[in-house]
Amino acid sequence: MNRRSLLALPALAALGSPATAQQRPTRLIVPFPAGGATDAVSRLFAPLLAQRLGTTVVVENRPGAGGVPAAEVVVRSPADGLVLLLATSSIHSTAPATGASLPYDVEKDFTPLALIGASPSLVLVSTTVPVNDLRGFIAWAKARRGQVNYGSSGVATTPHLNGALLDSLADLGMVHVPYRGTGAVYAELRRGDVHALLDVPATATTHIQAGTVKALAVTSASETPLAPGVPTGEAAGLPGLVSETWFGIFGPANMPAPVAQRITEASQAVMADPELRARLLGLGVDPRTGDGQALAEAARTERERWSELVRRLNIRTAE
Image (cartoon, rainbow, N blue to C red):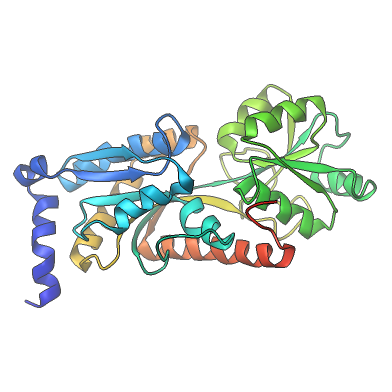
């Protein structure tokens, strides 16, 4: 038996032995406060993961500072599989792409374990904008270059980057208007002071159903049950308008292969549960069943996309 296998034995025992598991629960670190969408995902996922691992999985919320404190907890933990991170694009894709100063290397200091979900954004416009499809909006905005704006939840946030991507692809010359959270943007959309917003279905659906905004396109690569009847960017006339916020499980760097494999396989089994998948869709998350490589690729693809956009448009974290 080689040294790596010997190192893996204690961690495997902790994950596989009910008696040991009761003493040493697995901590699932969530970089957002209780009550949010990511927290809701974690609380659906954790008990099913616990069943698969034969252990207790405790959700631990560590909000604030763009997810850095939560990620640091995992980076500094032993690589025994007992401390995991439920990460989203903000930590491994958006933050490094926008030049945030991070106390860790997102490529080297984590072990990607499982991709569990993704959420695209919807291109939303105010009901005061006299169009009903993306082609119409592009033509309308081009005819008013410099007079049309899009809102976001802040500089260098996902809504900002998505809006900048739309603006760049269609060459619209829109003005970015950052707010503190999307709630304020929706209020301005209702009044017609903001013309457009790109936001996830979890928060957009209520406003669409209320008739206060119109959904013109979805940024997924293909049609999604999260936005039935809403065309993709390509189908709506704008190829390249593809962006998803992903959800995935990471551990610390240098996890022994048997430990990582056990958590990956358990996560994949959890994601095959039909009831869980249905409940995730209700939260605005499209369930995915991907291994560590799929998660690493999703994170890298998004990071490279936003890095290129940030460099080209000179987007800075403080405007």
